Image (cartoon, rainbow, N blue to C red; front, top):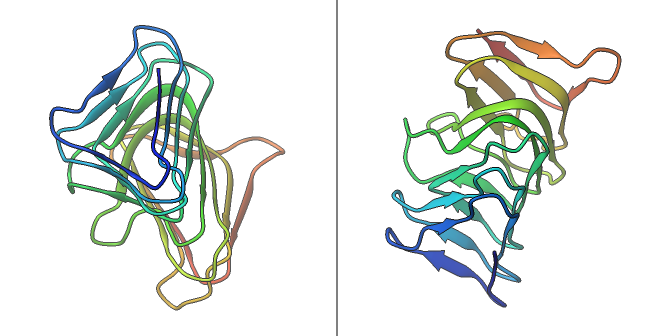
Length: 178
């Protein structure tokens, strides 16, 4: 399924989007993509892509696909702390933001195989909490504020870099916690 809005999308508690195996693409156009705490976008075994020119507020997104799960937005935040926001244990999470991904008080909780993340703007931290093992392909942080670094945590597993291809860059701080 493809769901799109020209100037933003708001998905309420009962606005779940699902597929048993086809790709799911949600595009908010020139606005924000706002999911509620109970909104679930489930691509089944299909690919999943979310994009917004504005902010992206995550309820829960999931796929069992082993390809790319792509998020592109001005910023990405989780609606609720403690809720796993992205469940894609076989996928590579590709994120492109301009003003951050998560925060120190509400990290984006993920369960993915591999992560490739860029924050290209001058503000916004990258704060991620992985449920288990994580392979980091690339993290590039352009923000320059004193609180705009990178923090990658895991609850129960290892954080590894992809052999010979990983790139970790931050203009402020880079913290990995096991």
